[in-house]
Length: 295
Image 1: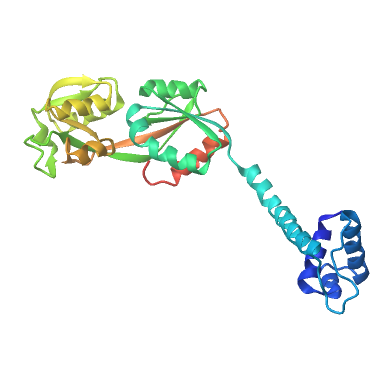
Image 2: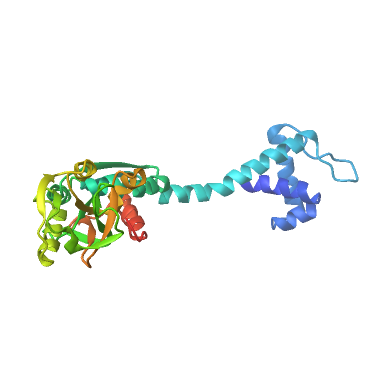
């Protein structure tokens, strides 16, 4: 029995005409009759009431009609389903990232990616910047995300996204009442820094040097979360990406102040191994990122 037989039966019942059913399926009326008879013999039921002037379907025929429609629908949707399976992105996506990006920019992107590609298993490592590059070079991860990216041997780096850098201070700090201040206003302020070997620290130091602003460095921390906690207890001010203080800003525990300086941006780099063919999962993730104006 072929799938076309079920369509012939449906057309016959819906048109109540052997001739129209034959025309719709490009066969003869005799072929229609033969196929209906074959169905009846196969299932040992009578589908069409014969001997009446008006076309009529038996109770068994109506049940068979419903089943035939379901079979045809399943058959018609099979091609789309198979195509979907062929294009479905599966496998594993391994990402290494610095903490600030991993905790603030990455989560919303991962949520979107997982909604689009639920079959992909994503793992994330939180590392220092130099370690991110090395993990990509070693092939231990598929992608890396770093701040203030630099060229490194064995990897390609794309930097299409950036964060605004802002001054942060406690609500009762003298600078908190301003929406923006010149960078000279930070002179001699107690300043809480990132660790000396972090790219963001080096970039901020360059900004101070270029603008001839001397600050009083009081503390140094590896983690942006620790920097923020120190600012909250009024040990000084700091400069961080605006995207990293959304929660504290809403709570009112930290006040962001714009710095009037053209260099106050933190570029974000996407790192991939130069000689490695990307997996389907990593290609899909990179494609998604490139469609987003902000990471």
